[in-house]
Length: 310
Image 1 (cartoon, rainbow, N blue to C red):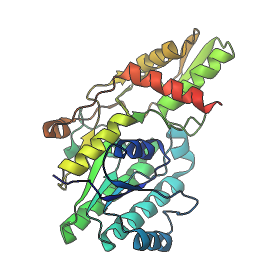
Image 2: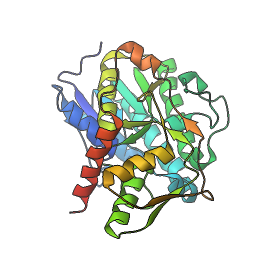
Image 3: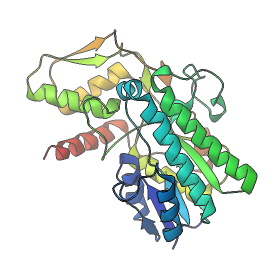
Image 4: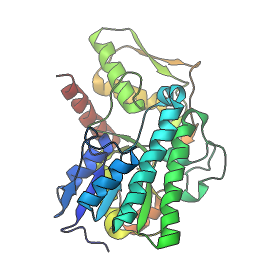
């Protein structure tokens, strides 16, 4: 048991969907939350990160900062997704160690697993096969972050842990028409189609791939749980425990948005990984389970999206 009470907890990436959810969750804990905007601290700049850690000396670090995006963004900006994420990970993890951080949580992604991993995907599937090409740059950077944390544990006994969230959605998501992930992208697309009275909405791929989705507030709760209750070198999956076909998922969002037209699947576009359902038995055995069901979570997310429109 690691007590967060009265600790100085630095959340790197606090303005992102994940980081902001973790900050909200830490608001229920008697601790001091440290944040710094990107305009004041660029995590890819080593000397700046070292100076910030020297001045602030956090007891706990949650590394939620990352360069993220969907299939299109990964395809056209591979350098950004590889180099920027590698820089942030190395700078934050090394500075955490050098300035006495007691506990660090590195957040990866289930895209680290092989494209054709056994389903549901256990943590042991890491590095057992080729990655999905459409997001390999981001995945390789995240794998490097995992190994960096494990290296510090092995060489110095650092209490650095890593968790792998499944596909996330919720308040604070990026609804950009080109750079967003599937949930935010579909919410925006169906909403705009409804407003324009469009007859159809085109969804990339065949609609056959299956995906698992977890509300970001559930993720934040799991992160606090792991900080308080887990300190092993093995990575931990965080997910809902069930998946849904993209075609069925698109129909669900259309219903929530109240889009009345047709859904057309563009088979010329990539599907990505055929299926990605994670095995959450390791986390469940520790006593944590998610609470926010998919439809309710999507309804809340749509309301969040409407709030971004002003």
